[in-house]
Image (cartoon, rainbow, N blue to C red; front, side):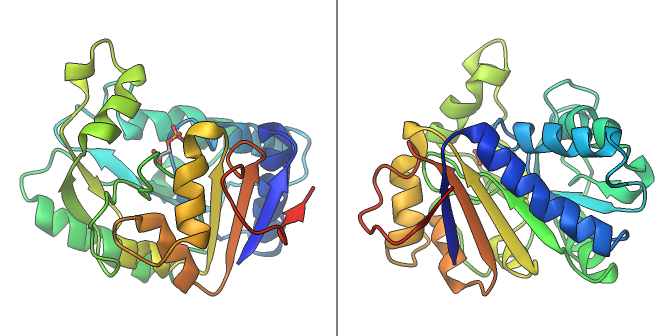
Length: 249
Ligand code: PGA
């Protein structure tokens, strides 16, 4: 596992963007796993800068979002369909037809989940999966106690996650109670995992994910079982790590 502690979220975003740009320049049809949430936004902004500078094109890149709320209109501004469109597809000049977000409103959610995993496999799997981490250690919406081998599935959201995401909605009650998420088994099949975290509120989860036991109580500890992981965190998110051999940039 490569853990890099950076001086600021912006420095982390530059580093993460460099990894993604290098991939896409060598593989224009690359497949990206796309996280929502606040953490990856500076990385997406850095990628958009690279596109504007003519350094890279995302026109042929495929994308698969990590997750989506259940029961939220895909046209709702806080649906992940809209967040991915607004923060990723448009600024990076991606082809909307090549970007998929899990279906949270269909009549047969279980079938939609199977179709999603099939679609990822059909394009040869994800090259780089971008990940944030929840304050409770979740990856995507894989909440504590989710099977480490889970496929894409529908899940109930914990009270912690709903509280953490209340800032995106007018009232806490509006945060959906369920979501569809790539499973931990799905995520672990990506060739590279790129886990980003900033801030003191992520320090416990990051320490558990990197230095704790592999446990479904901290879904992000899954990264310990993966052969190619880049963790990029700022000093505050790193503040509860107890070992000192990590890279610093
Ligand atoms: P955040 O969310 O990036 O908005 O902090 C991360 C997550 O919940 O996985």
